[in-house]
Image (cartoon, rainbow, N blue to C red):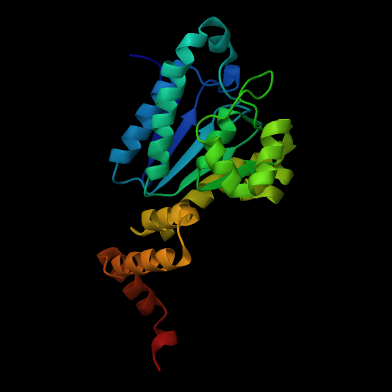
Length: 262
């Protein structure tokens, strides 16, 4: 039996919170073919697990992820497309289609593919020692990967996205917060606790409509206001008719009956 600690990606379940942890800390969690394949398998398992209401992404050790593995880039560059990019692109597509909140908990270097993954998450909480870089290669930026050219302009605007991509400079957690790339910055020693607290809060708030809400937001860029209003109306109607939502409303009324008795 293989040692779980030696696996490149760890998948853990704690009731309604599932966690995918990148587990190659000796190379700053850089992605090689084995990690890409394992990450895709973990994402596929999450899509089938009905109990999961929040997915948390983490990096083992002092780093979230420092991009593509430079050893594979040097030793076997012809294997990168099929062995790394194709499975990772499939995994990113699955992440984008998940009908549950996806939360990234990042620390240390968040570079290249690591930044692309963080950009694709619904929420990002960063340790104060996090530093970010768009470059997908150790020597600088060659191109975009894993949807970064799609997510980044939508988060910061076209000109800011081009500045980040073309200059390939590093920026710290506070700068990432100011640009809207992360939602919160916390001291490193509080990252684990704050991340799980946010995940638990999302679990308590999660409705079946969360998936629809995410898609409304993500698809709004290609729609007119009239189209968006129509989609919102349909989504809200479906939400109001969902048994779980009705049960939550009834519980709220009962808990706060003094506010509704007139």
